[in-house]
Length: 97
Image (cartoon, rainbow, N blue to C red; front, side, top):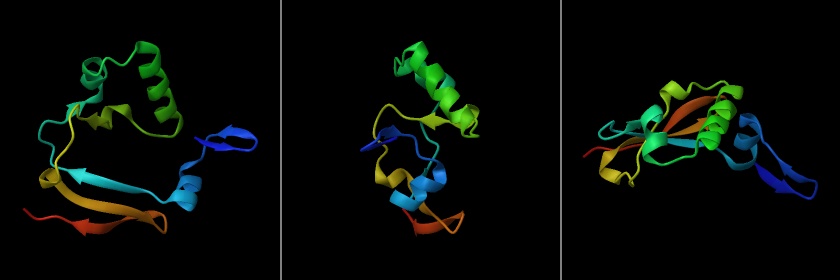
């Protein structure tokens, strides 16, 4: 979602990549919490949780694959960073500890 002179608009993934770029960080799965548990531990209200799931599904993603953490994930838990370029994820940096 971005603000424009015409109001707020929802960007598609391709528009987001074009305007801002996109990256993801792969982390070690230690202590990651599945969405179905995390939403309760994070005390996300039911209507907000449902809206997030709907928004994700509308964009073709599977909430069963969502994981998160209630605390920061230290860099020594990072495996790699990938950047979305030319319609595919490519390695940006790999970490070794």
